[in-house]
Length: 68
Image 1 (spheres, rainbow, N blue to C red):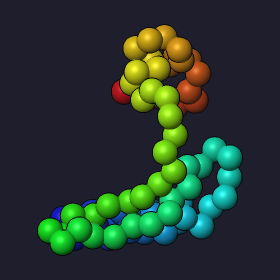
Image 2 (tube, rainbow, N blue to C red):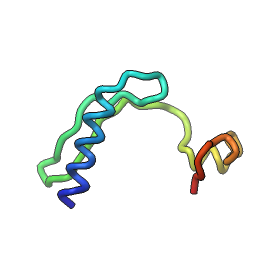
Image 3 (cartoon, helix red, strand yellow):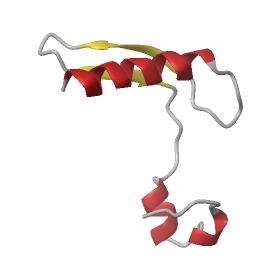
Image 4 (cartoon, one colour):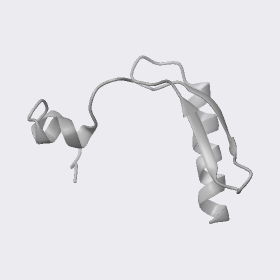
């Protein structure tokens, strides 16, 4: 669990340092009083990737890597 928490903080730190139109901004990261990790990022309205694939807004051919 400690490794995954450290990885989450590392990822949040890296994402917070990137400014690019295809990367969602990260504003904060931390731990709750129970020790759970949280990351605060910009809200992007719309549907999930799964929803877009299900509704056929996107197809698997739109992605250069395999999506499960």
